[in-house]
Each structure stands twice: as structure tokens, then as C-alpha cells.
Length: 167
Image 1 (cartoon, rainbow, N blue to C red):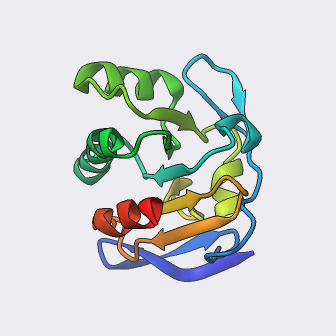
Image 2: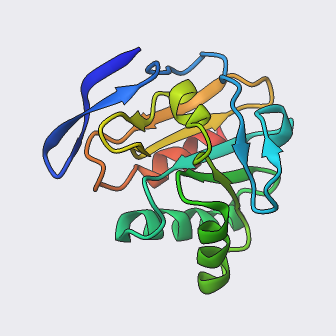
């Protein structure tokens, strides 16, 4: 499924591959790679509340700020697992975390086959990177909050994400 013009990059319309998920939907399964090069699926992310912070690349200013912000927010969200998902290689993700003391969130690389992006509707067809999005998944694997940021270069609504987790 393709969604032409579903996001923009510097004002230019881009096509997203995959469904547009909504609150109440079952969280789709996926297969990504963690920092130790092991496969991680939805079941492997735990049975509690999880935040999936999806970014195009950690080497850009907004992605950098978004990842650091969720690392800081994690202190206020005990028991919540926070994951950053990008197309960056696991080695680059690990380097980023080590360089900026990002130690409260887990990195997941979708570089192998874009499984997460296709399942969650964040894969930009033209560039094979993710659009910016946030998903909060509850212990029942239902989506509790979803935000597809319309412009890739814009920040998500951090306060709304935290409020959704706490509600």
C-alpha cells in the first residue's frame, strides 16, 4: 500500500509505504536489528507500555534532538520501554548513543529490509528512510497514541506522547 503525498520533506511531497495506523489498531509485528546485531520483533520489545520514536537519521538535527528528548523523558516514565527506530546501521546508532550518553532508550535498526517502516507506514519510498512518527503501544499490543509528523523536518508533539503514556 502506497500513500502518495502522506508526508513532506522540505515541502516536497513524499510517498509513504504501508498502512496509516490509528489508535486502537493492533500493533503490527516487525523484524529489526538491535545493537548486538540480534533480531528484535514486537514480542521482543516487552509486555509493558512501549514508545517507538521513528526518525529518518540520527545524523540530522531534529532526529538528534528527538532522541535526546526521549532519553531525558524516560526518567519520568518508569517501566516504559522507549525505542528509537531508524534506517541507520546498528554501528552508527551505537556510536550516536556513546557520543551523547543516550543510555535510557534502545536503538532498533530497520536497515535490513524496512520491515518496521512497511508495517507501520513510515517508509519513504523515494529515499528508503523513515518519515518522523511516534507510536505508543500498550501492554495489550494495541496502539494508544500515533503521530505521523506531516513535515519530516518538524518535531513531534512530545507533551502529547508523555500524556498518552501517563493516561
